[in-house]
Image (cartoon, rainbow, N blue to C red; front, side):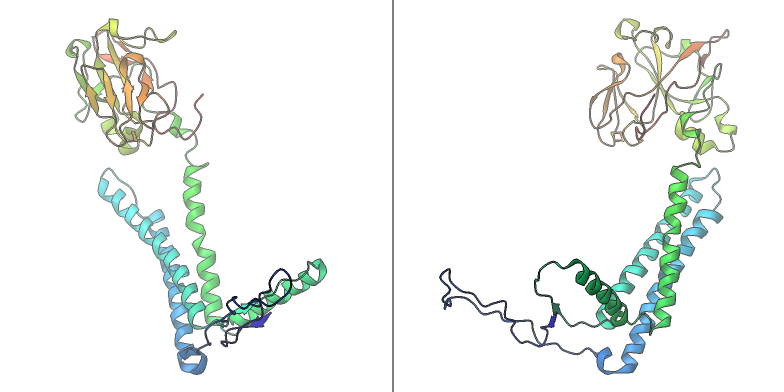
Length: 342
Ligand code: FES
């Protein structure tokens, strides 16, 4: 390798014509601009100051990670959206500071303290053994030049920031992986659970549901549940009544509705927005987020938009007092289709 940052041209710019004669029209290699020493190259106090700044940025990263864990472990979610928002804010800020601190710290370290000479390595034949030795030499050289051995403050804060920065990812992936168990596959709906109005929880009689009407529905008892928000996020349902002749139930689903009354999950199978728009004349349900459109007459099959699965249907019937009740839980997981459904 040769140091070309002193402004001297290299020899790789020499160009010859096909018959070996020098080519007068070729531009000579201008080389790299002259190396200009930085303040930290010439003044030990400036180098020390840069070292402290880099360590401070790594400390910011450590504090960001601790902020993430504070939000993750110590903010208890209750029935209000405020705690959810606060937790999300702390998780977001913590992750941002953790990544920002490491990223900016490394850039600042490279710009102010690591050698900034430019080196050019000429091509040569492949020599595995010699190359391996060269590579080992390069790694040693990089460690030496980075000054990590001579600067314990930077080394220690970098190790601390790097070791902590991966922990939030483990915590988050644990939430996606084993921790939820099969809770995402089940909702509060069960045999005999009444369909009630959202949000007051008033039971709904079949006779109250007119053709063309739509009800936003929650399971009876949801308002008293401890984890009301989580349960509601899975169990909300849209209830509509159509002319029974407009429905085309597939085999096995003929009795999942009652005299044209049908219930479908309100959670869009794209990325989970509430499907809240009902077009009475076309019998279409629309998701306002990305315009997925579901056809009620075809068991909420997707007829437009990015959703890939129909909305899950809740089998319903009427109890002996005329109230609408569920026959069972949904037969498939509700919500975004990020897993295969059985
Ligand atoms: S969330 Fe419904 S279409 Fe995207």
